[in-house]
Image 1 (cartoon, helix red, strand yellow):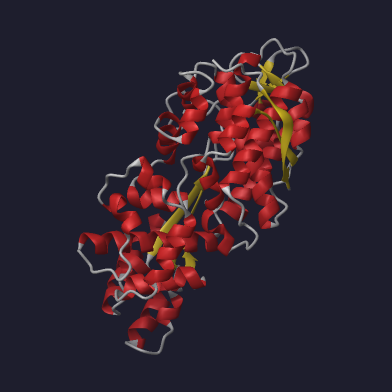
Image 2: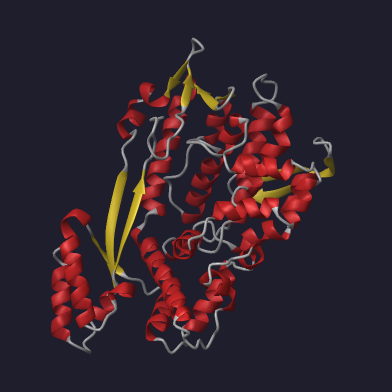
Length: 433
């Protein structure tokens, strides 16, 4: 068993635009950062297609993972130190789980998962537990150490306080990505007083609580998250890019199943199409690989794949209108028929995309996605759920906001070639939304 206090002879640092510096003194952490599986995260963007909306959003899951690690390091080494509720024997475990929590993300993760029925959390677990460089480094801390790290990330570890640091309604993961994503997109919404929040954090038996004197900093965090989701993460232009990306992958999958003779054979996708993805296959996929294929598919004979690939690479995205599924489902069927008559395949050129978020909720037994609440530590030593004390948070608690948009290629509809009368009819229907 490696002594958890084993340190590097000299502290290593990463200059970071959000936290100033990321500090590494533990050899185990330094070795994990150097593994090929962790270095792969440099080639996976944190925000997927958002760079097509906010041009600065080029940051990677590598930098985010370092940021989450640094927040946990500060909490453990500077905030929790000396508190009897915190078991310092869980320090290294917490740091490793923070660093590795996003290890299994794939290229343009959410679109990939949707088309190929994948789960990045399962691949994170595989990378930690199977024959990888990461697993070999973790085993240097003990034979069962990889399993414990996987359990923390999977939220099944018996010490719920450790789990809550990385996965809760106010955790290190969210605190890093809100600030990092705000910085790189150039918006002001995601900023909040993290240092204040950390100063009022206190460890309890199974979760973190916050002194009531810091309630306004927690409110600010909740509202920052709310604004970031609707102004950045659910931005309609980003979603248009995701729609096209998804349609490209669906088209390639369909063509493969039809034995289409690709000019550029999608060899990296074969196991995905066949539903038998090995860990080695998965780890070969990153965003440069995907973009290479998209670039090559701009020359394919299939007109749909060629056009969709060009659209993504050239940022020639679909336009959108607001869509209400309850009111407009019949109109959508009408549009699909009109698209077919106009020789525009609605399967690839007409899409409803929905976004939904629940900014804060408290524990509701039996409901899907049960959430442990944020608790405030009151002056009398008792705990009180956040929305009971905050009118701001109470106003949004348990209220899910959902948004639907219908995406379509306006350029094809205003093109003078083809049946212009039918295209004008389609545009007339779209104006009714």
